[in-house]
Length: 400
Image (tube, rainbow, N blue to C red):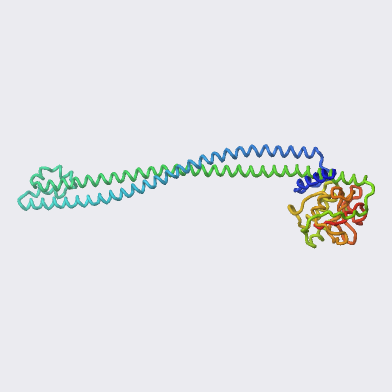
């Protein structure tokens, strides 16, 4: 029986990790309250699941758009490399065109000199004038009659002139076409990349919006879950302490102080003297304010015995995970044991109806000079009383 009770107490210790709200109108949370909290939690959970599905779809779409954008970016890089090659080729063609243009000029000069020589040797000035003023090889070819009077050297020079100019023009046209085509390809890829980047940015914006909604829903879900679990924990704690207190009133032969049979608590304590005095002051303030006693409550408007202890030390700066909302029996193992003649203000006092840890049903905060601040019972309320006024004082105090 004792083993089962100890196991139950341990399970309750695991559950009590969140602060429990106070219920001034009810001694403990009802099953209807817990069911209502469960319903709210289920609704929040369903809403969160719907948003999670939307978020997953949006993320999948984002991955697809990202892949397309990466392909477009790769094509753009490839096109840029091809453009550099084309530009290099165009420069080479331009250089070659310049060289051939020089050759054209040189052959034109040769033709002029030959025409001049022919005139000196007896030719007509009217015959050679077209040669000297010709705009290009085609004009010269169109005047073959005049060329025949100048000899074979002139014809060879003219043919060289024409060939050089044709090659130069073809090279320039090829280079211009290559640059134009590459520019069109570059523009096309850049436009595709711009579209993909814009789509990706828009999708990322949508995902961020959905994520914000999802985070809010999860926050609400966790809040609803905390309310529900806190109500359940609070009810379990209240029922346990209520059962133990009721049992204590029905147990005969309780000692004023139980003998020390070697129960151990923590090996160290966590508070400073200033914190202990602050906890005492908090408990004193609640008692003097005549706050009511309510099962399972930890303030700020009403308290039970362990709720007063929890709230007092929480006000002194202790918080989870260093300080949990437990029941009286568990607090005895959660503190460092000190002898009753070594008590200092702020130490905890424990009361058991059989002298065992599992039958501890009440606790209080030592005020000094043999007195304590306590949340006694529904009828008595919160009290400043003698530490021996409650039967079954354990032979040790608990230093937090």
